Length: 90
Image 1 (spheres, rainbow, N blue to C red):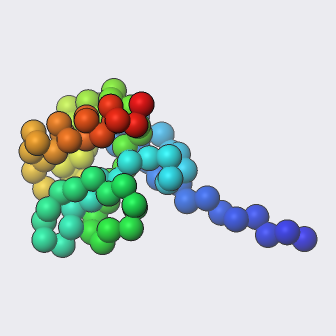
Image 2 (cartoon, one colour):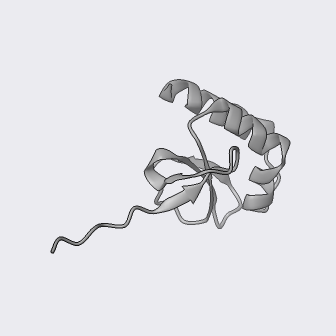
Image 3 (cartoon, one colour):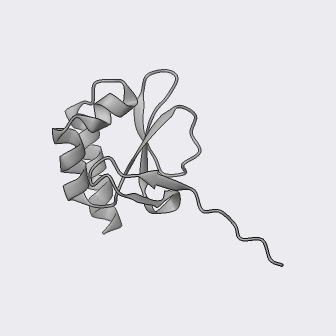
């Protein structure tokens, strides 16, 4: 009998739906309190996940889910960087 590999699921902070972890973009707050986009998904720190959709980014920012989840203030620079990242993926 072949063993079925479990696919890790994460919830998007915009639409609040669960997706496979590799389909989402991870935003991480490092131990040094920097907030970065983690494309590898391997950086240490507290992570939050977003769909590759600008509407989800807007919802997460408007509802303050991103800053609540990461427990830090989110600057305009990071929101713009995330928006540009979404543009480059689409």
